[in-house]
Amino acid sequence: MNIFENLGLSPHLLAAIKRLGLDEPTEIQRLSVPHIIKGEDVIGESATGSGKTLAFGCAIAEQVVHKQGIQALVLTPTRELAEQVKNSLKKLSPHLMIIAVYGGVSINPQIDDLSKADVVVATPGRFLDHFQRRTVNTSRIKILVLDEADRMFDMGFIDDVESIIRTCPKKRQTLFFSATMSYDISRLANRHMNNPIKISAAKQVDPSKLKQVYFDVSRNMKLSLLAHLLQHEESGLVMIFCNTRDTTDFVVRNLRANKISAIAIHGGLSQNKRTKTMELFNGARVEVLVCTDVAARGLHIENVSHVYNYEIPKDPKDYVHRIGRTARAGESGKVINLLSDDDHINFSKIYSQYREFSIKKEQMPHVERIMVARNEGHRDSHRMHQGRGRQANRSRWR
Image 1 (cartoon, one colour):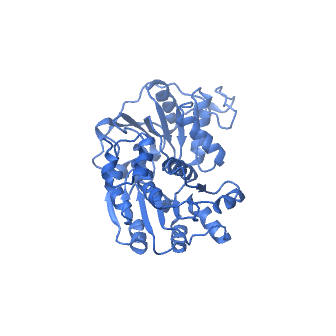
Image 2 (cartoon, rainbow, N blue to C red; image 1 turned 120 degrees about the vertical axis):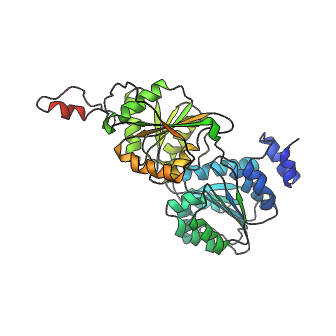
Image 3 (cartoon, helix red, strand yellow; image 1 turned 180 degrees about the horizontal axis):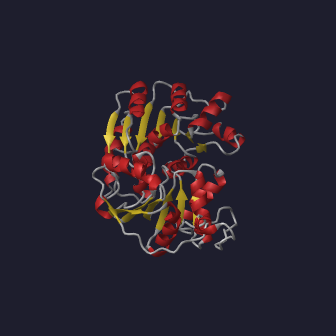
């Protein structure tokens, strides 16, 4: 029996879900879909990868009619998530014209697509740009979704989101989905939602299957330790988190210089590059993804066995989002934190806010120092330059 039948869905939507090979709803789907189908406003708290897109996609599939203008708008924080949501919605509602709108690409093809769209999945900045150019009509929108709402606010989109909400008809269904519930989300909900149903689904990570460890390592040995662990830990897909674009590029460059296949994803890359990167990683053609929080947030990536924190995030919530990438759907996972002097303050914040975490210290293994490639295509010489002394040479190693 398909348990989705108990959620009050129409026969055509049940058939679409069956074609996707889904038999049992996730917790967020089971709790939210009955309210969504009734047309109620919903605030759903649930982790990335927990099935939120299908939950709000049910409203779109049931209510949106082809060729009657833009009737549903989904706002997302990143270009990758916009594409991912668009593709998921197309599988659920193949008869609808569903488009993604975001910056970093030419605006002209989007203008043409908007004139034919039934559903728009967009990042706030580019959508507001279209509205100001009068290339989008929001007067028929009856479903408004904020996906990964907390990340949009973290990225500074709150004013843009507020402006977009005001352009939509007051008579509509509004759905907020977020991994965490912040004060900003509650305040926005109070202003723009109609008696919303609040739903919180359990985290998808299985704590019994997630091992968290840390190494105390000097800054000039951190890269060497990372390479050593990648070469000696038995793993599937690996995600390595850094706090900045520059560090992300630096880590990828040096892993490649030491014959570890790795790719980067961050906000400084072109959309085509980011899309290709995710295709390579999701297809397991490259097994190490080095990324920033902003670029990785919201992306649904399966089969991640290890998460490395090359740098510890300033916000403890970001740590939770990072570790939520592994130990999913009954699989085991491991989180490895590399702590140098710069990281201990942020690490202490995590421990004080999430006292239930068990993060055990690991003994430093014997690690061979690796040479540092500071520029693309260049590896620093390991030879000591005459007259510069031992300390100058040591600074070239990590």
